[in-house]
Image (cartoon, rainbow, N blue to C red; front, side, top):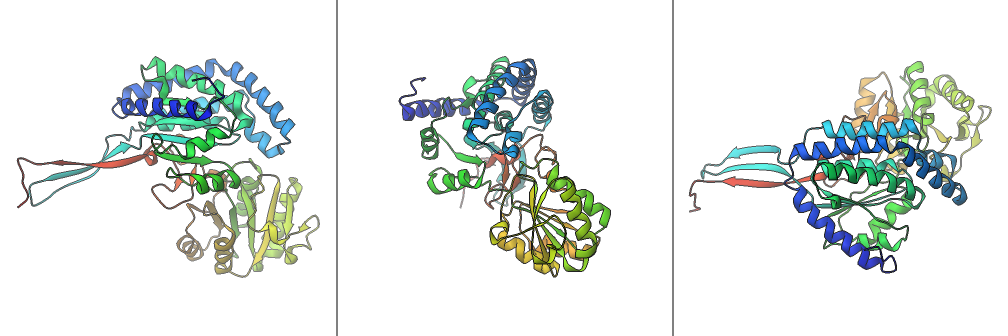
Length: 421
């Protein structure tokens, strides 16, 4: 299979092996899947030095490509981040196994008993950029939900992903599950992505996780169903009834904790009644932290801000930069978010429950928050152990996609010689 001169043949073999593995995983016991994940966690930790050494090669590659500081941060692994990968694997292992779970059941007058039960999707293709931890998160969640997975990591994280994947395979082997349950595409060649997008014979769903360019490419070219994970154009609306200290704390965390994740705040909307109070305080705090604030005309009197342009509305910076705009009401904020948002995560800061209720009702983002940092937009923080991404579409799965969201269902119908008149 290693003849990389023939990418279509390589990808076809990967697909065939994944399909065969998926058949076995569909009935693998919860205990064996749990053992595989615990084994993988142990193997990742044992290989931490090797993983970090591999990551150094990726960081060098990223620097040569001119990646931004935020993207380099997404790429970088150290011992604490490897520990976080281990913790995530153990957390997924501890989750309830969704496969075979009865969602609902009922009896019919005909004498039939009908159950709707969870079942794996089959083979999942995951195409992602930069973040090597996705190799473990996606592999773990697919395994937990009884799916085989084909992982195509970003060119930047090529070596790190290989090292992490090797540990995942060790876990599978220890639990006597097929190694082909978690496969990593062994090339940076983009032709492999094209082959995945048209592999309807082998892949049941594609999950793209990355920037607008990647997701747009997948949505345009995929013949396989897609879970859309668009960029995080995340808004925080500061209402006229916001609490000053809560707002300052939440906005600083939402923007500066980690700028390169999809839950980082990218646009601040400030009610005109609090521009000279809470608004000024928050913007000055951001400036003091080193954040570039692209401000509209009403906010440009604040020293240190720069003039916003039309391109700043609806922009995902993934860096120490944020747009800031004045709005006249919660309805005005909602209209702005509907125009420029990505249906990912949006937040309102207010002590007025009616304003919060209006914000939550009128907007249809996958995640809506009230008085909480948007950095919580994460499957682990939602109690899912990990996530394969944040789905911004409306079909099948929305928000953090964990193991349960990677299942479909089937009907189990039982009779007693029952016939239809």
